[in-house]
Image 1 (cartoon, one colour):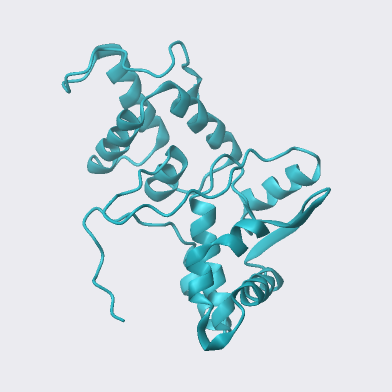
Image 2 (cartoon, helix red, strand yellow):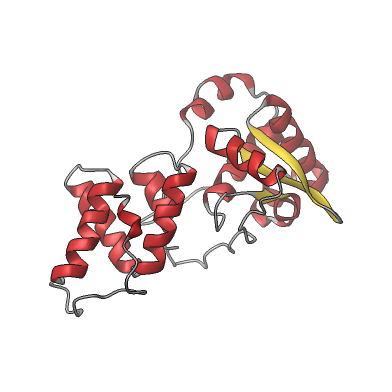
Length: 226
């Protein structure tokens, strides 16, 4: 079964460079490799902050189940084994999901992930939902503001996540996407530049047929990080 190539306007997922360097050299188990790549994708598409993925999501993931169902092996067993190997290697960190809930929460072993896991361990509940379903064939999934930032600016920190959350509550999805697009075109990939674009559009209006002040919520100006 061949691959027909990538469709127009295909989305990209941010993957840490060591995955294609040191980790690629070290990983010798196919289940670990597939679980590593899929878990990175699931974390990128997780809602809320900090981004976490639970064992139930991994075991219910159709793509991962199909990817690990070869040679008559049990997909659930292979998922558990592959993720366990990835955690033992240090690619991901995990902790029990919660009292009365079987399974673990997983985060990427980055500075932000370590801080997030420490916060959860101290009783700060993560604002997370299950991963969104796969988009139907022929549709293009619209990225949230966290994915836009990581894809176009850089690593997301807890402080920046708060600013992005406030902007997402204030502005429409289309304005946010267009502001990121304009910043990329201008080769000015900073949040301050993007926020200034949004502020200017709110203040002066846009030549897109929409009225000035096309906001979700008025009076929220903290996202500029002043």
